[in-house]
Length: 545
Image (cartoon, rainbow, N blue to C red):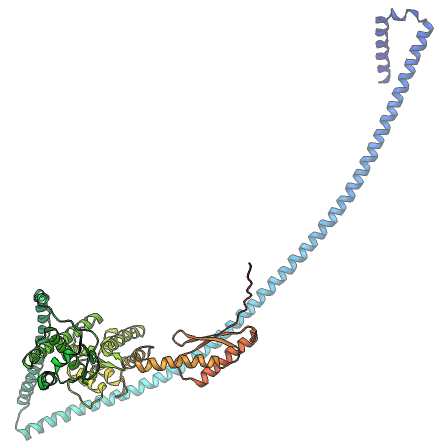
């Protein structure tokens, strides 16, 4: 290879010599030979040096490659060791997780086994109980069968005795069984006729009510032209007048007018020094309302004399009776009660002019009826019967004639008289424990009556006691040290107490709430529960100017 390169170089030199021969004319052949030899020797030396350098680089490359291989082997060993270590750690983790999973499964299995054992014991107990029950049922069935056999035998004996008694009665009365049947049928026909007459009378009265309603619709235009006096809703005891001059006209000559009014209405009229007012005194609120409306008509018309007074009072009584019937009918329709006797409808209308402890009786009865309907629906009972009993529970308070019979028993008698159901009659008579309750409607009516009368503001006495209770609750809170303000809210069901933050700490606030609640519980009587809330706050106020 080297020789070929040398020959090629010679050829190149010869080529160069031939091309540059003109330049080399001054050289001698000796110098030329020396030059050629120097070139050859330099070339050889350069090639040798180049070869040694190449060998050295190759050796360095081999050494470097060996070093790289050694480092790669070392690094691979390290990576292999790391991977093996990681694999061992992962294996240990998986092993621990697997062991935990197995333990959990074992715990679950033990629990399931325990439950199964419990169920088995429970089932065995139930089976034993069922066996005992079956045995007792079989014994009872056997005893019942024996009793049935005895009853059949007794029935046969009773039939025989009945036949013997009938034969004896026929012999004694000289009347056959057919004749006795005829007399019984005749008596039943008489009873049916009386019941039919009562039913017919009720239908006629109901028709009269409807006829009055239709008549009012027909003459409404005439009533508007003539001018009908207004009737107020509330029953009052004071008749207001425009001036005291009217008092003399009402009294009349020698008191004729006032005596005529008192005799016609049954109301005592008191004319005293009270300015622009006349007092009407009577236990019957309907009579008092008749007297008030009659006086209003007489004063408005201006014609006040005995004949005119009797005419006006008679007319006013008819209007009040019609108003009572209309109110009763409207109330029954609003509550969805059907088939009520006209006499009971009239009694319901009379409740409008009666009050008890400052509470209007009709409004009270409507509230009780609605509450009874709600409670009976919640309990799965008949709401219509409950509403009926709630509306009629106080009808004994509005008799046309005063009696000594308690109003609950009187209302029950009226309900029985006018064909109400036994459940309704019992609820009316038992709502004040006058008689024993025999159905679920009766306690519902009693409870709803108490709810309507006990709510705050329903009755004057209850309202006064309610306000007094609120004041007592606030006074109890003020009796403790550190209390700044106290408010009884939520109809007395909650007491909010504001305390001074400087004197009362958070721990002391909790203790104070407990002490107040305990004192209210021991010192007061109240329905339900009272929530005591103690409020402590700290305010930091600064003013920027």
